[in-house]
Image (cartoon, rainbow over all chains, first blue to last red; front, side, top):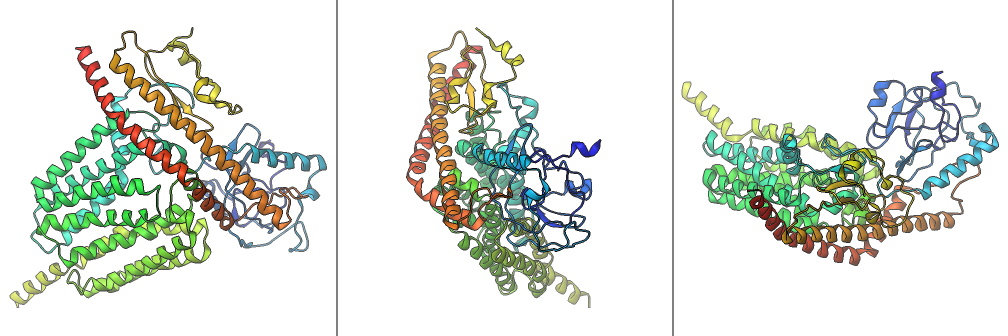
Length: 468
Length: 166
C-alpha cells in the first residue's frame, strides 16, 4: 500500500495527511504530533506525500526548508531547531533546519484536538516503546554529526560529481570547457562582464563596437583568471563547505598546475587585450582588480571582516574599466556607476553569507554574518538605502535624466524593504529573499540606467529641434 | 597484491562507513597503482584522499613532486580532522551548557528535542572562530606556502614527462 511506504522512519507512525501553514520542513518535532518528514537525499522530497500538497509544491522546496503546504495545521508548538546536519542512513533520515521563531498556523480546520492551544504531545499518540525509540534516534543523531552537512547545491550544476568511490584520475578532454567555465566561475564572470559593458555603454564617448568587444573579452578573461586563482588557493577550504565541495580542483578533476596555467594564460591574455584593444588605463584597472581580488580579498577572508568591503571595491571596478575603455579617463559618472556596484555588494553578499554562517565558522572564514550578525544586517540595510541616494545623484552628474531617479525607485524601494525585513526578522527566509532579489535588481538597474542615459536623450532633443 | 584493475571492481571503500576515528588517509589499500586514484572526501576532514600512482620508471623529479603532494595532503588532512572534531565537540558543549542553563533537558519527555535558536548559535560561531583564530592563521600561512612551493616541482615534473614521452 502506498501509505505504508510513507511511514515515518523515525517513529514509525503514519503521516498526517493534511496540514497547512508555513512549516520548517526539517524540524521533525516541530509539530508535537508525530508528523515527521523523512526526506530523500538531494531533492528534499518528503516521503509523506500528504505532507506537501502536490508534487509540484515538493519541487518548489527551497534551499532553506520552508514551504507552504495545504491542509489544516494540527500542531502549532514550534521549537526552533538548529541546523545540525543530515545524516543519511537507510533507516533514519532526519533533517534539521533553522526555524522561524514565530510560525503561525495559517488555517485551522478539522483538528483532532478540540482546543487549538493544547499542544499535542508526542507521547500521547505514540506507544511508549516508540517514544523511547524516538529519543534514542534523536540522541544518536546528535552523536553522528558529520562535518559535511548536506546542503543545497552550488549554483554550478552537479554535472561532474565523482561517485562516492575511488576513481582514476584521468583528464576528460571532452569536459574541459565545462571545467574551465567552472574554474572561472562563469556565472559570476558573466555578471562582471555585464557591468563592464554597462560602464562602456553609459560613458558619453563615441560607441565603437570593436572596443566594446575588446573590453568584454578582456574583462571576461581577467575575471576568469582571478576566479581560477581564487579556487587554486582555496582548495582545502572549498572542500569543507557543501556549496563548494564539487569544484573541479576539490575533486581533482584537473591538476593544480593545470588550473594555475589556465589562470596565468587567461590573466595575461586578458590584460593584453585590454591594453591593446582598449587603452592602458583599462588594462591597469583590470590587472589591479585581479591583484586586489586574489592577493588582498582572498587572504583577507581569513583575517578580518573588512574583506567584505574590499570585495565590494573589487565589484565596483568593472564599470570603471568599461568607462575608461570608452573615454580614456574617468569621470564622476564612472565613479557613480562604481558606487552603485559597491553599494549593491552589501545586500547581495551579506544575505548570501547569512545562511552559511555555520559553515563559514567551521571553515575559518571571518565574515560579518558569523562574527557580528547585527552589523551584517545593518550594513545590508544601510547600503540598500545608499542605492536610493545614489540613484538620485545620477541626474546630478549628468549620467542620466531625471526619469531614472524616479523609475529606479520601485526596485530600489523593494530591495530596501527586503533588507528591512532581513534586518528585523534575522532569519534565513528573508536573507534568501534578499539575495535572490539582488540578483534580479542589478540587471534591472543597469537596464534602467541605459534607457535613461543622458546623451541619448540629448541627441534626440537635438534631432527634434533640427527638424522643427 | 591488488593492482589498479581490482580497484575498479572494488567500489565499496572503507572510507564510507565513517565509524572509525583513525586517520583515514592510511586506510587506503596500499597497492601500487600506475595512475592517480581519487577517493571520496574523508568523513572527518573532508579532504579527498588521493592515491598517487608510482610508474615503473619514475624519475627523481616526478618522485619529488609526488612526495610533496602526499605530504601536503597529509598536512591538510590532519589539520582539518582536528579542527572539525574541535568544532563538533565545542558545539555540543555549547548546546548542552545553554540548555542546562535554561533548565531544559536535551530531549524532553514527549520526545521533542530542544535546540537553540540561530541567534544563540551565532554566539557560538563567533566564539569558535575567535578561539581558533591563531591556529587557522598558522594553517593558512603554511598552506599558502606549500601550495605555491608545489608549483615549480609540478612544472619540472610535467616538462620532464613531456620530454620523456618524446
